Image: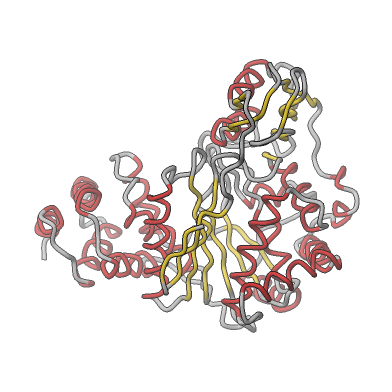
Length: 440
């Protein structure tokens, strides 16, 4: 078997066997197949695509290239949740405690932020004392004890995926649905979950801007999960404007606390209830989505969800007093309102622009090596559909430097104000399951 023959086969529209994909991935990791041949193969996949069976085989090989996490010592069905990334996406901080409060174990590995999207680990580390470094035994023990633990992703998981992604990033082959799907799902499967709920974002601030592409990615990932023995559901949700109001690490922790207390933004609350209901059903903790949603809603109303968050913070060394005293979280020295230039109705809040403004303030990383400021960010005061008067705040910049005129000017441009009433886009565009696809 030769790499050049497999490149030619895919170039000509052929279908790889499991053995051929094993040869490619193992050879690339071992250095037997050079970058230029793997880049040629990735470009062939970009143009020719892969079948669901091929994509599942590829995912298996990415998983097999590194260590896997054994969650079998944890009692119950372990359901993981993954988001394809967005701005103000605080769902993990809310969903973890919310689902754990219903008795479903959440054993989660999360990542750091890069570019205009935030990372769960950075957000949690804005809590004084909080650690995301647990030994495997501590991780298992904590989930068995309080049903929730979140740690940083291990560098030993899916090393082949890291190599392949780095290559795709510099060869214009990132935007390939089979390669994206196998990359995402390899990490989820290596992390040991029994079932997986995917939040696939679409819109201006998402990786998959077009709804059709988001559904295609959702279908590909669900097919991988089911073929590899993981019950998998994908929800396609809107990311044309930021989710919730807060964008920035400590600011999003504060908003997560508000949401768990029942006073959070309507869109963040709704999405967490939708995703959480699917997690409960997959775990067997509720017979259907309606019953699952009722359980989660009740746990917010009774304070059980917020109490689960408090236990989680304390268990991982954090200052649990932030639940009642959120001012203990890092706070920026300056709060600068960004004012509306005219009256009307907000018709657009460009998610990517808002995320990049927060990054320029120091809330995100331009490169993996960049340091971040956990206190800074942007808090929206208006979203699509809201009426606004001239001179009224559209957003508030939280900064640790007074001169943010360039960021403020860019933030104003992220808002469009129309004379006629505007309406927000649907939050949930549909879902994909093994049984099929439902829009709306």
